[in-house]
Length: 238
Image (cartoon, rainbow, N blue to C red; front, side):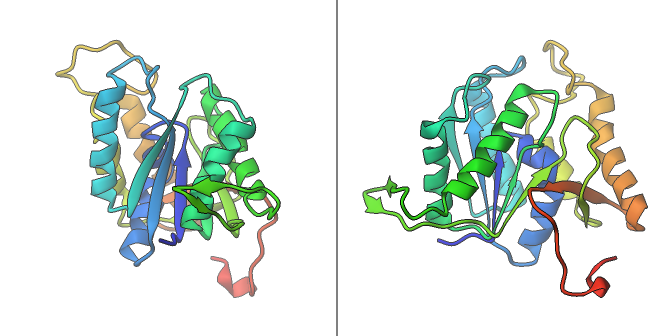
């Protein structure tokens, strides 16, 4: 199976929060999208890894992705080393995505920047023929995604480009709120965290609305790029 987009997050819910509306839009346009979670989020203050597993499956169904997989790296403690890179490379080579979306290049949670660099490195290394990998008993061919983009998370980083996601913010929020153990719910008696307040939930929409305002649309999501962006014509730009 070949994917158009592989979205990767250090934790279940990273992808939904960072680029959920973009994925929903591309899926509606017929693109094949998969999600890869690096950890189960087992160190999260609220809920459990088992609960997050169920929530992630529900969110994937809401978005309509082709598949979702978890590499079960150690939450908080995974490192960008050969072993981790090879596991990501195996997934890239199996699904051959044209585009990879991954964690923010800089963020409050240490796993986000680590995950960002790990995925960027794996995308490059995946294209080297002399790195041999076996997946499900089969020798894999080299494959390098055409593009690697980083969605924006907690910090308000300046994006290199934004995607018009007008009409898809409700689908994004539905997928985000599938993680009911993590976000604001007045009926839950759980410890407070930076993302469990009503303000954080509202800020997701505020940011999308503000980025949309800057390009003259209703809502948008922002991304950073690993390399210089190019277009065929200045008329491709809004």
